[in-house]
Length: 118
Length: 110
Image (cartoon, rainbow over all chains, first blue to last red):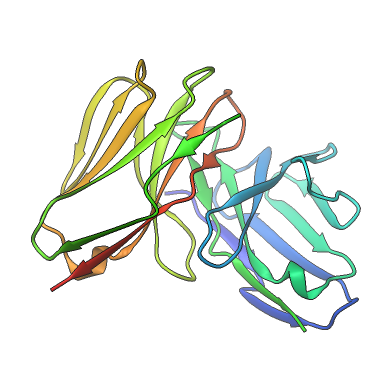
């Protein structure tokens, strides 16, 4: 099956700094990737849709200047949390859709990145 | 809105059967997924329904009624390792992201 990786798996940073999270599709090309955030004991909340070669589409309430998304190639999307604050501490999960899969609607999830801002 | 409702918590015992329900807004519906998520891990795919009826896959089955905006996930012969969150997710427009419900935390006891 399709594999999506994320790096890093865990990161701790100080308040005010920026953190970059990478999401890669390892064995397929993903023109579209999705970024979700999950707070403890809550479900996944869609943050943005990342489109290769174009600007990301952000969900209502998500600050595009704070959460910078770049989808520079068909296998890599990055999420940069700028000027991080403790309330940004969360589990960030990316997913990608494999256009060649039998169910083109299925999304394959990365293992997630646990961000802690101190 | 894209309301997806599922119970917050459920409990069951080993060997039992449990049914987790999910209701959603029907307008624009394009498919429904069930995922399992253990604490601190990414969701793993369980099932996909786009047509009415029951899809059976081993101990897990998923049912869909498009006219009622209703789905359920049926787990048989429960095992302790089935203790997890179960997420109902819907696609409303082709090519768009999955939108997740709040999830149901299932606790299986011996």
